[in-house]
Length: 395
Image 1 (cartoon, rainbow, N blue to C red):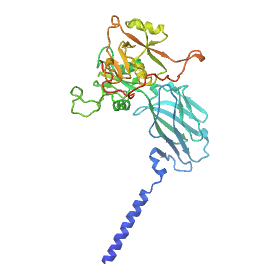
Image 2: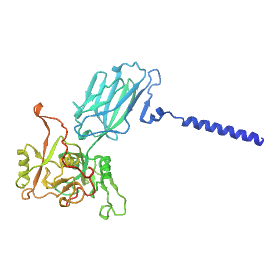
Image 3: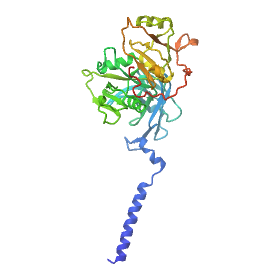
Image 4: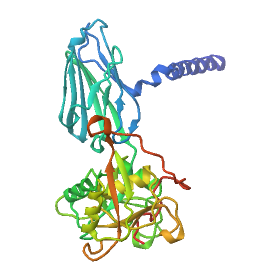
Protein backbone atom coordinates (compact mmCIF):
# COMPACT_ATOMS: atom_id res chain seq x y z
CA UNK A 1 0.00 0.00 0.00
CA UNK A 2 1.37 3.39 -1.05
CA UNK A 3 1.78 6.22 1.46
CA UNK A 4 -0.98 8.18 -0.31
CA UNK A 5 -3.43 5.26 -0.01
CA UNK A 6 -2.47 4.86 3.64
CA UNK A 7 -3.23 8.58 4.29
CA UNK A 8 -6.64 8.23 2.61
CA UNK A 9 -7.45 5.20 4.79
CA UNK A 10 -6.49 7.05 7.99
CA UNK A 11 -8.55 10.08 6.94
CA UNK A 12 -11.57 7.85 6.28
CA UNK A 13 -11.28 6.20 9.70
CA UNK A 14 -11.00 9.59 11.43
CA UNK A 15 -14.07 10.90 9.57
CA UNK A 16 -16.08 7.87 10.70
CA UNK A 17 -15.07 8.34 14.35
CA UNK A 18 -15.91 12.07 14.23
CA UNK A 19 -19.30 11.29 12.68
CA UNK A 20 -20.11 8.80 15.46
CA UNK A 21 -19.04 11.23 18.21
CA UNK A 22 -21.01 14.09 16.66
CA UNK A 23 -24.14 11.96 16.51
CA UNK A 24 -23.74 10.88 20.15
CA UNK A 25 -23.20 14.43 21.40
CA UNK A 26 -26.04 16.06 19.46
CA UNK A 27 -28.58 16.42 22.30
CA UNK A 28 -31.66 18.59 22.24
CA UNK A 29 -32.86 20.62 25.29
CA UNK A 30 -35.71 18.13 25.62
CA UNK A 31 -33.20 15.29 25.88
CA UNK A 32 -31.43 17.09 28.72
CA UNK A 33 -34.65 16.98 30.72
CA UNK A 34 -34.90 13.18 30.45
CA UNK A 35 -33.10 12.40 33.76
CA UNK A 36 -35.98 14.15 35.54
CA UNK A 37 -38.52 11.63 34.29
CA UNK A 38 -38.69 7.90 33.81
CA UNK A 39 -40.58 6.13 31.02
CA UNK A 40 -42.03 2.72 31.84
CA UNK A 41 -43.11 0.42 28.98
CA UNK A 42 -44.92 -2.40 30.73
CA UNK A 43 -46.67 -3.69 27.62
CA UNK A 44 -45.03 -3.02 24.29
CA UNK A 45 -48.23 -2.95 22.20
CA UNK A 46 -50.79 -0.43 21.05
CA UNK A 47 -51.61 0.66 24.62
CA UNK A 48 -48.48 2.86 24.80
CA UNK A 49 -46.91 4.12 28.02
CA UNK A 50 -47.47 6.34 31.06
CA UNK A 51 -44.94 9.10 31.73
CA UNK A 52 -44.86 10.95 35.07
CA UNK A 53 -42.99 14.21 35.62
CA UNK A 54 -42.43 15.85 39.01
CA UNK A 55 -40.58 19.02 39.96
CA UNK A 56 -36.84 18.49 40.48
CA UNK A 57 -35.42 19.48 43.85
CA UNK A 58 -37.93 20.36 46.54
CA UNK A 59 -40.87 22.56 47.42
CA UNK A 60 -40.73 24.70 50.55
CA UNK A 61 -43.39 26.01 52.93
CA UNK A 62 -43.85 26.45 56.69
CA UNK A 63 -46.09 25.01 59.38
CA UNK A 64 -49.67 26.17 58.90
CA UNK A 65 -49.14 27.03 55.24
CA UNK A 66 -50.48 25.44 52.05
CA UNK A 67 -48.31 23.85 49.38
CA UNK A 68 -48.75 22.12 46.02
CA UNK A 69 -46.84 18.89 45.40
CA UNK A 70 -46.44 19.05 41.60
CA UNK A 71 -46.94 15.97 39.45
CA UNK A 72 -48.02 15.77 35.79
CA UNK A 73 -48.51 12.76 33.56
CA UNK A 74 -48.92 11.92 29.88
CA UNK A 75 -50.44 8.71 28.64
CA UNK A 76 -50.88 7.04 25.27
CA UNK A 77 -53.21 6.70 23.51
CA UNK A 78 -54.52 10.20 24.23
CA UNK A 79 -58.17 9.11 24.24
CA UNK A 80 -57.75 6.84 27.29
CA UNK A 81 -60.80 6.95 29.55
CA UNK A 82 -59.90 9.23 32.55
CA UNK A 83 -61.93 6.91 34.78
CA UNK A 84 -59.25 4.26 34.22
CA UNK A 85 -56.40 6.49 35.46
CA UNK A 86 -55.40 5.90 39.09
CA UNK A 87 -53.42 8.58 40.96
CA UNK A 88 -51.76 7.58 44.21
CA UNK A 89 -49.63 9.65 46.60
CA UNK A 90 -47.59 8.06 49.38
CA UNK A 91 -45.01 9.38 51.83
CA UNK A 92 -41.67 7.60 52.05
CA UNK A 93 -41.22 7.00 55.78
CA UNK A 94 -38.25 4.64 55.52
CA UNK A 95 -36.07 3.01 52.90
CA UNK A 96 -38.70 0.36 52.18
CA UNK A 97 -41.78 1.75 53.95
CA UNK A 98 -44.54 3.99 52.64
CA UNK A 99 -47.47 5.79 54.25
CA UNK A 100 -50.65 6.19 52.18
CA UNK A 101 -51.66 9.82 51.65
CA UNK A 102 -54.15 10.06 48.78
CA UNK A 103 -55.63 7.88 46.03
CA UNK A 104 -58.03 8.74 43.20
CA UNK A 105 -59.60 6.54 40.53
CA UNK A 106 -61.74 8.60 38.20
CA UNK A 107 -64.10 10.61 40.37
CA UNK A 108 -63.56 8.42 43.43
CA UNK A 109 -61.06 9.76 45.96
CA UNK A 110 -59.78 8.78 49.38
CA UNK A 111 -57.49 10.56 51.83
CA UNK A 112 -55.74 8.68 54.63
CA UNK A 113 -54.83 9.24 58.27
CA UNK A 114 -53.75 12.68 59.44
CA UNK A 115 -54.08 14.00 55.87
CA UNK A 116 -57.88 13.75 55.94
CA UNK A 117 -59.50 17.11 55.31
CA UNK A 118 -56.16 18.65 54.28
CA UNK A 119 -55.19 17.02 50.97
CA UNK A 120 -56.99 17.70 47.68
CA UNK A 121 -56.35 17.01 44.00
CA UNK A 122 -55.39 20.26 42.26
CA UNK A 123 -57.09 19.43 38.92
CA UNK A 124 -55.38 22.22 36.98
CA UNK A 125 -56.12 20.48 33.66
CA UNK A 126 -55.66 17.23 31.78
CA UNK A 127 -52.67 15.25 32.98
CA UNK A 128 -52.43 17.04 36.33
CA UNK A 129 -51.89 14.72 39.29
CA UNK A 130 -50.69 17.43 41.69
CA UNK A 131 -52.11 17.57 45.20
CA UNK A 132 -52.52 20.50 47.58
CA UNK A 133 -51.69 20.05 51.28
CA UNK A 134 -53.35 22.62 53.54
CA UNK A 135 -52.45 23.51 57.13
CA UNK A 136 -49.05 21.84 56.79
CA UNK A 137 -47.76 20.21 59.98
CA UNK A 138 -44.23 19.45 61.16
CA UNK A 139 -44.87 15.77 60.48
CA UNK A 140 -45.63 16.50 56.79
CA UNK A 141 -41.92 17.16 56.16
CA UNK A 142 -40.33 14.53 53.94
CA UNK A 143 -40.30 12.74 50.60
CA UNK A 144 -43.48 11.94 48.63
CA UNK A 145 -44.11 9.57 45.72
CA UNK A 146 -46.61 10.27 42.94
CA UNK A 147 -47.72 7.13 41.09
CA UNK A 148 -49.97 7.16 38.03
CA UNK A 149 -51.41 3.88 36.72
CA UNK A 150 -53.27 3.22 33.46
CA UNK A 151 -54.47 -0.39 33.51
CA UNK A 152 -51.18 -2.31 33.74
CA UNK A 153 -48.85 0.57 32.89
CA UNK A 154 -47.47 2.87 35.57
CA UNK A 155 -44.78 5.38 36.38
CA UNK A 156 -43.70 7.24 39.50
CA UNK A 157 -42.05 10.51 40.45
CA UNK A 158 -40.81 11.98 43.74
CA UNK A 159 -41.22 15.37 45.43
CA UNK A 160 -39.39 16.54 48.57
CA UNK A 161 -41.40 18.75 50.93
CA UNK A 162 -39.16 21.01 53.01
CA UNK A 163 -40.14 23.34 55.85
CA UNK A 164 -38.74 26.68 56.93
CA UNK A 165 -37.71 26.27 60.54
CA UNK A 166 -35.05 26.16 63.20
CA UNK A 167 -33.04 23.32 64.76
CA UNK A 168 -32.22 23.37 68.46
CA UNK A 169 -30.44 20.95 70.81
CA UNK A 170 -32.45 19.61 73.72
CA UNK A 171 -31.85 17.65 76.91
CA UNK A 172 -34.22 17.20 79.89
CA UNK A 173 -33.96 18.16 83.55
CA UNK A 174 -32.33 14.79 84.28
CA UNK A 175 -29.21 15.91 82.44
CA UNK A 176 -27.35 15.16 79.26
CA UNK A 177 -27.18 11.78 77.52
CA UNK A 178 -30.34 10.53 79.23
CA UNK A 179 -32.62 9.84 76.24
CA UNK A 180 -32.99 6.74 74.09
CA UNK A 181 -34.42 7.26 70.61
CA UNK A 182 -38.10 7.00 71.57
CA UNK A 183 -37.65 9.25 74.60
CA UNK A 184 -35.87 11.81 72.41
CA UNK A 185 -38.74 11.67 69.94
CA UNK A 186 -41.27 12.27 72.75
CA UNK A 187 -39.14 15.06 74.26
CA UNK A 188 -39.17 17.00 70.99
CA UNK A 189 -42.93 16.51 70.56
CA UNK A 190 -43.57 17.78 74.10
CA UNK A 191 -41.66 20.94 73.18
CA UNK A 192 -43.68 21.60 70.00
CA UNK A 193 -41.09 20.09 67.67
CA UNK A 194 -39.99 16.89 65.94
CA UNK A 195 -36.64 15.15 65.72
CA UNK A 196 -34.57 16.94 63.10
CA UNK A 197 -33.39 15.27 59.91
CA UNK A 198 -29.75 15.12 58.83
CA UNK A 199 -30.37 17.71 56.10
CA UNK A 200 -31.98 20.07 58.63
CA UNK A 201 -29.06 19.68 61.03
CA UNK A 202 -26.57 20.17 58.21
CA UNK A 203 -28.34 23.37 57.15
CA UNK A 204 -28.27 24.61 60.76
CA UNK A 205 -24.52 23.87 60.87
CA UNK A 206 -24.01 25.88 57.68
CA UNK A 207 -25.80 28.76 59.44
CA UNK A 208 -23.43 28.51 62.41
CA UNK A 209 -24.88 25.97 64.87
CA UNK A 210 -22.12 24.65 67.12
CA UNK A 211 -22.98 22.07 69.80
CA UNK A 212 -20.57 19.72 71.52
CA UNK A 213 -23.08 17.04 72.59
CA UNK A 214 -24.29 14.24 70.35
CA UNK A 215 -28.02 13.92 69.77
CA UNK A 216 -30.57 11.69 68.06
CA UNK A 217 -31.92 12.51 64.59
CA UNK A 218 -35.16 11.27 63.05
CA UNK A 219 -33.46 8.49 61.06
CA UNK A 220 -32.02 6.91 64.20
CA UNK A 221 -28.50 8.23 63.70
CA UNK A 222 -26.57 10.22 66.32
CA UNK A 223 -24.71 13.35 65.22
CA UNK A 224 -23.55 16.77 66.38
CA UNK A 225 -22.48 19.97 64.56
CA UNK A 226 -19.10 21.61 65.16
CA UNK A 227 -18.33 25.02 63.67
CA UNK A 228 -15.31 25.74 65.88
CA UNK A 229 -13.17 22.58 66.28
CA UNK A 230 -11.62 22.19 69.75
CA UNK A 231 -9.97 19.44 71.74
CA UNK A 232 -12.99 18.69 73.94
CA UNK A 233 -15.19 18.26 70.85
CA UNK A 234 -13.40 15.68 68.73
CA UNK A 235 -9.94 17.30 68.63
CA UNK A 236 -8.93 20.73 67.49
CA UNK A 237 -7.05 19.56 64.40
CA UNK A 238 -10.13 17.95 62.80
CA UNK A 239 -12.16 19.95 60.26
CA UNK A 240 -15.45 21.60 61.12
CA UNK A 241 -18.58 19.72 60.13
CA UNK A 242 -21.41 17.50 61.34
CA UNK A 243 -19.85 14.62 63.29
CA UNK A 244 -21.69 11.33 62.83
CA UNK A 245 -21.74 8.37 65.23
CA UNK A 246 -23.83 6.39 62.74
CA UNK A 247 -27.03 4.48 63.49
CA UNK A 248 -27.26 3.55 67.16
CA UNK A 249 -29.39 1.11 69.16
CA UNK A 250 -32.70 2.91 69.67
CA UNK A 251 -33.56 1.19 72.95
CA UNK A 252 -30.28 0.86 74.83
CA UNK A 253 -28.11 3.84 73.90
CA UNK A 254 -28.73 7.30 75.33
CA UNK A 255 -27.91 10.74 73.98
CA UNK A 256 -29.45 14.22 73.72
CA UNK A 257 -31.84 15.24 70.90
CA UNK A 258 -31.78 17.67 68.01
CA UNK A 259 -35.28 19.02 67.51
CA UNK A 260 -36.83 20.96 64.62
CA UNK A 261 -39.74 23.41 64.71
CA UNK A 262 -41.33 25.88 62.33
CA UNK A 263 -43.50 29.00 62.34
CA UNK A 264 -46.13 29.44 65.04
CA UNK A 265 -49.89 29.89 64.84
CA UNK A 266 -49.65 32.18 67.83
CA UNK A 267 -47.48 34.55 69.80
CA UNK A 268 -44.82 34.11 72.50
CA UNK A 269 -44.44 37.02 74.90
CA UNK A 270 -42.80 37.85 78.22
CA UNK A 271 -45.51 38.39 80.82
CA UNK A 272 -44.99 41.69 82.58
CA UNK A 273 -45.40 41.39 86.35
CA UNK A 274 -44.46 43.43 89.39
CA UNK A 275 -42.62 40.51 90.97
CA UNK A 276 -40.85 37.34 89.92
CA UNK A 277 -42.51 33.98 90.50
CA UNK A 278 -41.74 30.30 91.00
CA UNK A 279 -42.81 27.69 88.44
CA UNK A 280 -46.29 26.97 89.83
CA UNK A 281 -47.08 30.69 90.05
CA UNK A 282 -45.79 31.17 86.49
CA UNK A 283 -48.22 28.53 85.18
CA UNK A 284 -51.15 30.22 86.94
CA UNK A 285 -50.09 33.66 85.71
CA UNK A 286 -50.11 32.58 82.04
CA UNK A 287 -53.50 30.86 82.46
CA UNK A 288 -55.00 34.00 84.00
CA UNK A 289 -53.71 35.90 80.97
CA UNK A 290 -55.48 33.52 78.59
CA UNK A 291 -52.32 31.69 77.60
CA UNK A 292 -50.04 28.80 78.59
CA UNK A 293 -46.38 28.65 79.59
CA UNK A 294 -44.39 28.60 76.35
CA UNK A 295 -42.57 25.47 75.24
CA UNK A 296 -38.92 25.45 74.23
CA UNK A 297 -39.72 24.97 70.55
CA UNK A 298 -42.19 27.85 70.66
CA UNK A 299 -39.57 30.18 72.12
CA UNK A 300 -37.08 29.20 69.40
CA UNK A 301 -39.72 29.73 66.70
CA UNK A 302 -40.61 33.15 68.14
CA UNK A 303 -36.92 34.10 68.20
CA UNK A 304 -36.39 32.88 64.62
CA UNK A 305 -39.56 34.12 62.90
CA UNK A 306 -41.10 36.79 65.16
CA UNK A 307 -37.70 38.24 66.11
CA UNK A 308 -38.53 38.05 69.81
CA UNK A 309 -35.80 39.84 71.75
CA UNK A 310 -36.00 40.01 75.54
CA UNK A 311 -33.12 40.37 77.97
CA UNK A 312 -35.05 38.82 80.87
CA UNK A 313 -34.84 35.20 81.98
CA UNK A 314 -38.14 33.37 82.27
CA UNK A 315 -39.73 30.01 82.97
CA UNK A 316 -40.63 27.65 80.12
CA UNK A 317 -42.98 24.67 80.16
CA UNK A 318 -40.22 22.10 80.78
CA UNK A 319 -39.00 23.94 83.89
CA UNK A 320 -35.97 25.45 82.19
CA UNK A 321 -34.98 29.14 82.27
CA UNK A 322 -34.22 30.79 78.95
CA UNK A 323 -34.44 34.07 77.09
CA UNK A 324 -34.17 35.06 73.38
CA UNK A 325 -31.66 37.59 72.07
CA UNK A 326 -31.88 39.00 68.54
CA UNK A 327 -29.68 42.04 68.99
CA UNK A 328 -26.68 40.98 71.13
CA UNK A 329 -25.41 43.33 73.85
CA UNK A 330 -22.82 42.79 76.53
CA UNK A 331 -25.24 42.67 79.46
CA UNK A 332 -27.43 40.06 77.73
CA UNK A 333 -25.18 37.04 77.44
CA UNK A 334 -22.52 37.79 74.90
CA UNK A 335 -21.89 38.90 71.35
CA UNK A 336 -24.01 36.38 69.41
CA UNK A 337 -27.78 36.20 68.85
CA UNK A 338 -29.53 33.09 70.11
CA UNK A 339 -31.66 31.59 72.88
CA UNK A 340 -29.78 31.70 76.18
CA UNK A 341 -30.20 28.72 78.51
CA UNK A 342 -29.70 29.04 82.27
CA UNK A 343 -30.50 25.42 83.14
CA UNK A 344 -33.22 23.83 85.28
CA UNK A 345 -33.45 25.56 88.69
CA UNK A 346 -35.54 24.50 91.68
CA UNK A 347 -39.18 24.98 90.66
CA UNK A 348 -40.39 25.84 94.14
CA UNK A 349 -37.82 28.26 95.50
CA UNK A 350 -36.22 29.98 92.50
CA UNK A 351 -37.98 33.08 91.17
CA UNK A 352 -37.99 34.34 87.56
CA UNK A 353 -40.25 35.88 84.98
CA UNK A 354 -42.28 33.73 82.54
CA UNK A 355 -42.75 33.38 78.78
CA UNK A 356 -46.32 32.66 77.73
CA UNK A 357 -47.78 31.41 74.45
CA UNK A 358 -51.19 32.42 73.07
CA UNK A 359 -52.69 30.87 69.94
CA UNK A 360 -54.23 33.09 67.32
CA UNK A 361 -58.04 32.88 67.26
CA UNK A 362 -60.57 33.85 64.60
CA UNK A 363 -63.01 36.03 66.48
CA UNK A 364 -65.55 35.92 63.63
CA UNK A 365 -65.74 32.14 63.56
CA UNK A 366 -66.74 31.40 67.12
CA UNK A 367 -63.21 30.93 68.37
CA UNK A 368 -62.08 28.54 65.65
CA UNK A 369 -58.30 28.42 65.39
CA UNK A 370 -56.88 29.77 62.15
CA UNK A 371 -53.54 30.96 60.96
CA UNK A 372 -53.14 34.73 60.78
CA UNK A 373 -50.20 36.71 59.43
CA UNK A 374 -47.59 37.30 62.07
CA UNK A 375 -47.10 40.91 63.12
CA UNK A 376 -43.73 42.30 62.22
CA UNK A 377 -41.46 42.93 65.16
CA UNK A 378 -40.49 46.48 65.98
CA UNK A 379 -36.97 45.26 66.52
CA UNK A 380 -34.66 45.78 63.57
CA UNK A 381 -32.46 42.76 63.39
CA UNK A 382 -28.80 43.55 62.95
CA UNK A 383 -27.73 40.01 62.08
CA UNK A 384 -29.02 36.98 60.21
CA UNK A 385 -31.67 34.56 61.43
CA UNK A 386 -29.14 31.78 61.80
CA UNK A 387 -28.03 30.26 65.08
CA UNK A 388 -24.40 31.26 65.58
CA UNK A 389 -21.71 29.32 67.31
CA UNK A 390 -22.49 28.68 70.98
CA UNK A 391 -25.80 30.58 70.66
CA UNK A 392 -27.59 28.10 72.90
CA UNK A 393 -24.88 27.55 75.46
CA UNK A 394 -25.69 28.37 79.06
CA UNK A 395 -24.30 31.70 80.20
